[in-house]
Amino acid sequence: MTATPAWPPQSAPRLHVETPLEEGVAVPVDGNPAHYLISVMRVKPDDIVLLFDGRSGEWAAKVRDIRKRDLVLEVLSRTKAPEDVPDFWLCCAPIKKGRIDLIAEKACELGVARLQPVLTRRAVVDKLNLDRLHAHLVEAAEQCGRTALPELTGMVKLDALLKDWPDERWLFFADETGGASLAETLKDHPGPAAFLIGPEGGFDPVEREAIRAVAKAVPVSLGPRILRAETAAIAATTAWMAINGDWR
Image (tube, rainbow, N blue to C red; front, side):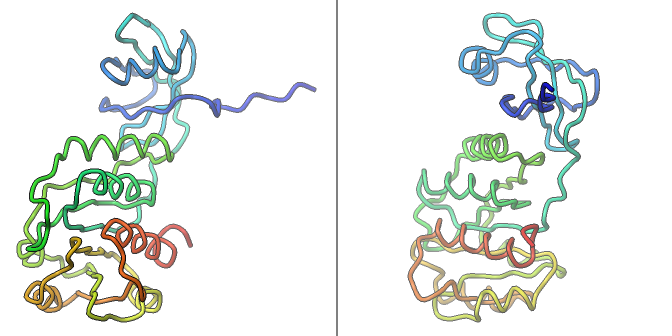
């Protein structure tokens, strides 16, 4: 007996689009995404491409109207419902290009709901290319199977972040001067949360006291070794997902 082919095909390219998706919608594709489908993936008419718009889940679409620099995808049916994103924010100081890109990529893969850049006194970078970070989030979501992009917010100063901190959300922060055991602390503090990661030089004493003054702030230790900022962000997110997130 001939095996029934997998649906949708496991080899189908996956693409994020801004067009709201539903059955029967025609999605025009141009620019870099069109180049990827036409010249790299070599799609042909009636091939299947998986689409997601960040809101309505994942959809299978059929390739049609291929031209030299653009094509149209016709939405056929939904293949995944919208994902239930864990209520976790990653707040991190800006670091050098390449390393902050890595944080964005892994934050998306690990299931972060919001990526919030935070300007601190010891940060060596005071500007971020949000368009580039967004592109890294999109690429990571396309690769890892997410149906919702993390929300990427504009950079805020630390004092502004703390001033408006929501009462219902825990604020864990990596305190290099000492903090509680991360695993045990996370078990004791379920619910909406965020993790605040400082820059390469860490938080200065004034910043540390300001963070501790927030009612929902919880200082934690990330172990006996000094971690790079990007390592700390990935490690903290992983621990939260394993204990309070969708890895349970």
